[in-house]
Amino acid sequence: MISLAEIEKVAVLARLLLTPAESQQMTEQLGKILEYMSLLNEVNTENVEPLAHAVELTNVFREDRVTPSLDREMALANAPHRDEECYRVPAVLGEV
Amino acid sequence: MAEQPYTIVIGLEVHVQLLTESKLFCGCSTKFGAPPNTQTCPICIGMPGVLPVMNRRAVELAVKTGLALNCEIARFSKWDRKNYYYPDLPKGFQISQYDLPICRGGYLDVPSPNREGMRRIRIIRVHLEEDAGKSMHDEKAGRADSRIDLNRAGTPLLEIVTQPDIRSPAEAKAFLTELKLLLNYLEVSDCNMQEGSLRVDANINLHIPTEDGQYVATPIVEVKNMNSFRAVERALTYEAQRQYEAFLETGHRLGDVPKQTRGWDEDAQLTRPQRSKEESSDYRYFPEPDLVPVTVTDAELEALRQQLGELPADIRRRLQETYHLNDYDSDVIVNQGRAFVDYFCQLADTCGDGKMAANWAQQDVLRTLNERDWTITQFPISAAELARLLCRVKSGELDTAKARMVFGHMVDHQATVDEAIQSLGIVQVDETELRQLCAELLASNPKVVAEVKSGKDKAIGSLVGQAKKRNPHVNPARVKEICLELIRQETT
Image 1: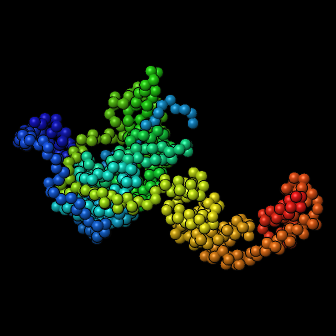
Image 2: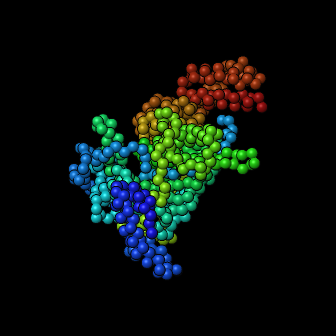
Image 3: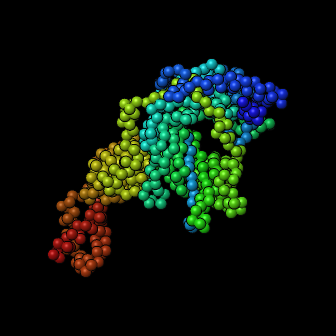
């Protein structure tokens, strides 16, 4: 269903550090989940419009009005590292 | 410039911040320049359990842009999550549009840089998405740290992607200039590159002709980090030549190597390789469950179309047809914005001379606006009053030098034409009196008259000098005209 290589790639993208044993375990477990989900493939979906959203609502809007923001102290309160004004993170160089 | 041995192929990806008051999914202000992290809330900093709600104005601005770019507007569009990790992206995903963008297709006609008509640049898509925060690298912290300001996170962005229709760096600049003008007129974005409200990346490669009449394509490079329209032009000029030289050296063609990202280094004036872009599938797009789709009806589209107003290309055409302005003059006026165009049109209509109105609008009015850092709405002389001044010049009552003095006085003292003339002590010489004076001068200077009759019109200059001595208020140009007229009458 899913290969070890795919698991390792997804782990990197999700910033998860897996041990070889964990990768192996994930491959088996995720494979079983995917296998179970593939039951859905048995449903005949011919002539069924793809669904964009589970809720059958459209056009939920707010008006373009400014509302008060968080106090900065409160916004930064949960940050593991911070200074007076900003969140601090290990240096990121280069662009995504 | 020498003929290049290749064709340059450029496509642009432009991001503009929308001129909304509040962010895309929350009520935080989008105002630029606030102290770091003072314009955030649980929604835009990605706290668990919060729900985004779409800003109606942002959707309207996106649709207006699509209409002005001749796009097909999606009657049904939806939102998707683009997943990647970066410290300035608090949720770990960006809400964007993947398979059902709000606008598709379309084009923008751009005045070609060498003024040879128009070039049509096709648009692939225009979609709405949220901006990320800002990372600032902090060197002085001993160990290198990055500081994150999330004020910008969640600001509405429009991504505009062109087909690879652009054929030169100058044309890329011309496209951006025209796009900026259009978005300014639509009041969709101020497109201020210094403040980051317009950002542009370019995809560029070359088609190099081969002996069999075909061509080879070089690998596509994405160029980033261009901080002005001039930088775009320079970066692409550099990159084209670099690709040509790289091709001669390595022979690499499109597909031989993965797509490369290079950053423009303004100081060194060259592009340098950056980390390779993740493949599009690596973003693991999936539908955003927290936002419902948006539908647009015909009636809503029509209502927004009515709000577009006259667009720059149409105004340019109107100025040329109605007032007989050339490309350059109409460009200068249109580039000043809608209020200036209105001012010019009123001036030209009232004084009845488009070319004269264009000269005064561009030279005297624009110069004053620039010197005093005013916009046309702050300019103290109304178009009607300035038209009155221009009429006096046309009728010969004032020469241009005096009219400029009057203009300066009007600006400084918010005076009318009559008030300014009076304050400056400019005495307008009565036409009959002036004719009398000229006749006397001709009578007492038969030599000059003879010279003029023999074809030396220039000789009249000495009479103008004498006239000014006798009456310092006379209009020299008018004296000359009357004298020549009288001599001609005498001859016939």
